[in-house]
Amino acid sequence: MRARGASGMRPPVLLAGGLGVALSVLVGYNAIHVPQERAVRLSREQAAEEQATQRMQAEVAALLAEAEQYRKPLAEEPDPAALVRDVVELAQQSGVQLTSISHESPQELPQFTQMTVRLHGTASYHQLGTFLDALERAERFLRVERFEISRAAYQQAAAIELVVSTLYVPPILSGSGAASH
Image (tube, rainbow, N blue to C red; front, side):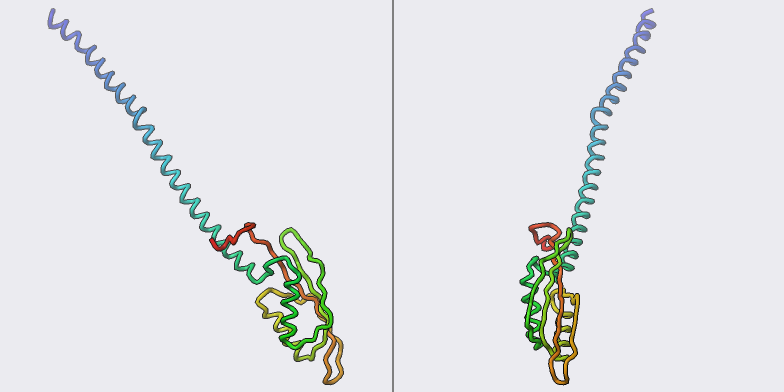
């Protein structure tokens, strides 16, 4: 009976040992492997998010730089006096004699401000053509809104009236040279 009793005790010990090993593997798997697997997956997700964020920031910076390039020919400030100075300088360079200059109040709209100046003067047809060409080729965006010319006698200057405007568009990110970053 002794052999039977000894062999009868063995299966519960083996069963208990097997259950202990299985329980240890299960606990180890859930306590060590699963959290590590989650941490690795989280790290990969965070790395992918960071890469996407960096790509997006680079794209935004490129778009801001491009937008700033489009702003360059526009007025730097919503200041009608600067428009008057620019137009008067071009008129003088062209030989146009200005008799009166007035600017209208800037028209402020949500995305931009339009500034307008009204000019009266005299010019020969050649001077007038040179002036209009200078306005069109100016470094700053200038638009002739209205143009009137009175018929001149032979060899005399014609009376002219021009309404010239420009736009001011504020920087996309206020208070910054956003595109310079």
